Length: 195
Image (tube, rainbow, N blue to C red; front, side, top):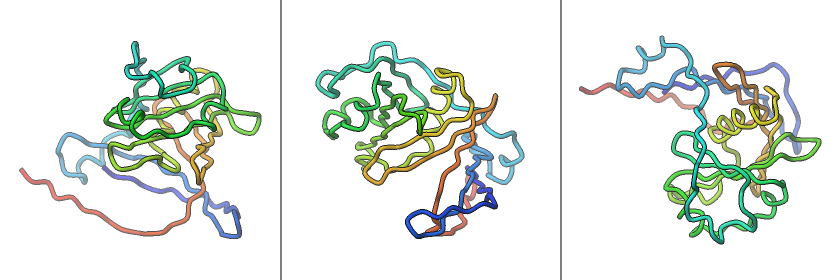
């Protein structure tokens, strides 16, 4: 898997710290077992496939109201609510959320004039009670909401304790995720292919 960061020239100030506006583009995802150097020559990956959840299980008592829609993207499941207040006011019960999926669980709704959508994302079975800002979840949320409200540029807010704003650009075959970030570590990882 190869991730490349494309730095935008404009900078923003947030809480007294310079924050670079960064565009993260996933240039290749290979699960074929081929070495990364060969896999990088392939086309960019397609946008996530969204599949409806016909009968979500174990929902009783998890949320104050029932979701109006639900879907699966990759291994994660998402629940769509009628009001953003359900997302903001949700009190995390790790036991109940962890019974919904072995992987990630997202909750989302339309938001207000300032943001198109709001969400939260939980992965308790992988040691993350609530993820502060989740790019992979917004890849799926961008596809879902782009279709639902007919916009290909969305401004999203993830309502975790820390919170975060993400801009999404959905095209026919990819999604760009843009947000403010502070570089805290630089590293290069090489994975050697073993037969």
